[in-house]
Image 1: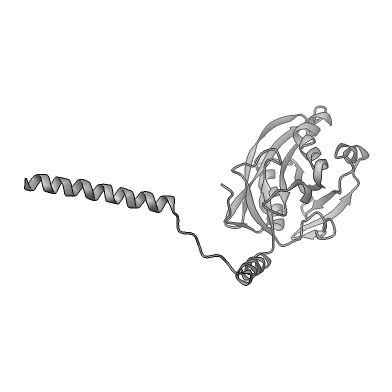
Image 2 (image 1 turned 90 degrees about the vertical axis):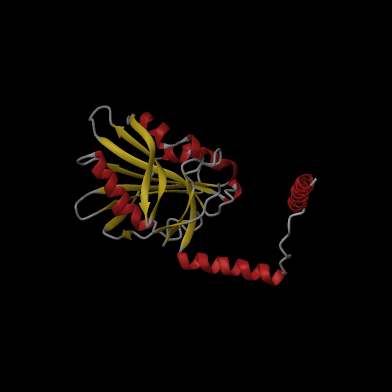
Length: 249
């Protein structure tokens, strides 16, 4: 009988614990509501932290159609927002000197007269050149940025893509991701490396707020690997300095 009593008490204890757990799970403890002052202070602290980092942008290898695991929050010392470019981007970036380039009318037509469109050639003392391009649009017109990418436009211009992949770019103590293409001109055999991604001012990625496509292109002077390293470590490192620990997933 003593054993039966112990067994009964054990079962009763297990059932009681299960009931308590079920109640807790079905009645989660809610955090106390924030006063308007507390919410304002929290927002102000977040804004101050962002200002101390620099200008924060959200980058991804895909646009409105898909948010990927490659999305990152990245810091730039420059205001690369649609309303500030191109004036906010210095002509001198480290050892690189820039010069504005004239965009063909066809490019403007492709993007349906975009709100932002400019191309700049940066050259260093060794004579190496990188072409930097920014294209930005808001609302429905922003979808044209996905229709006209290096993957589609370079082959039409006589530069078939030999290779396309996603690549990593070191930034500060971490890295971001970019679409990478290797193109070769049909008639001369010249090669180009191109890196590009999409950039937003907010993690909301709202089409009405706008979207920027940023592209880096450089001729291969020796090896593809050497040219990519030059673009990543010597040039892109001038534009982006740190990756913030932030993930949507």
